[in-house]
Amino acid sequence: MLRRVCVLSFLFLTFCLCAFAQDSRHFTFHYAFTVRNLPAGKELRIWIPSAQSDAYQEVKVVSVQGDLPLKRNIELKYGNHVYYAESSATASPELHFDVEYDVVRRERVALRQTAPHVVAASLSSTERQQDLQADALVPITGLPADLAVKVTQGKAQPLDKARAIYDYVFTTMRYDKTGTGWGRGDVLYACDAKKGNCTDFHSLFTAMARSQGIPARFEIGFPLPPDKHSGEIAGYHCWSDFYIDGKGWIPVDISEAWKHPEKRDYFFGAHDVNRMQFSMGRDLRLTPPQEGKPLNYFVYPYVEVDGREFPNVVLAFSFADIEAAVATR
Image (cartoon, rainbow, N blue to C red; front, side):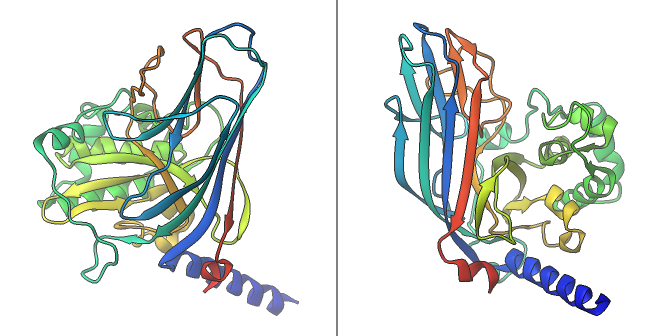
């Protein structure tokens, strides 16, 4: 019996490692939500992040359904795509929206000479400044800067400094969603609590990298389970990139490495296929601008009623592999 359990455990581990190593993954993704208990006769505005194609994912919109007409806009700071709907006077207490995507996500590997899908990149002075500046919850002075000085001591090259910061976050942080304060990407919280989710891991990395003059950026979307071919997606996943002159943008995923320590080296310089990106950046002013403060990040729908954030939104995200054999090869 024990031998059988060991064999099954080995096969499961092998299955998961193969899923991490695959070159591409083809799937459909449903982004659905319902706004409930809307007050009658009030001004309503809804912003929905819209996935877009890039070098690492090919995105096709299969269908867009909503109880209000949807318009496509582009957020100006990072170029994120947005669906937008509005009503001058709400008539229905409940509104439903559903966007279905067909997606091919490709493995992204940046630090091997034979890496597939590497994209040459250069930063303008404006882009470099943007990716070096602080965000509201991501300071680049004070405690995170002091930590970065300490952990990069003796490192001369930016790539070596980035690896030292990555290793510090990996060994110091704990993936733990208990208590309060986690999930906001609050760097000072992360420094103090030394725990959190992917947002906290990558916010700390970003702050420390930027404090060392290494441009870094925040990306967010959804995870796909490597051991399933379909199912519901409970919540978002985020990750980060840093920029090295002559090499371009280098991907990291420290929280995923923490969950799978055997992939620690892999996730410094690579993103697997088990994800779908929706937006980039922090402190976002949408298009058209929302009345509320800039969004900390943008992966869930944002709703305002009479100019105030309306939180009564029920989410329903799901996926299904189109080529199931790909996920297990």
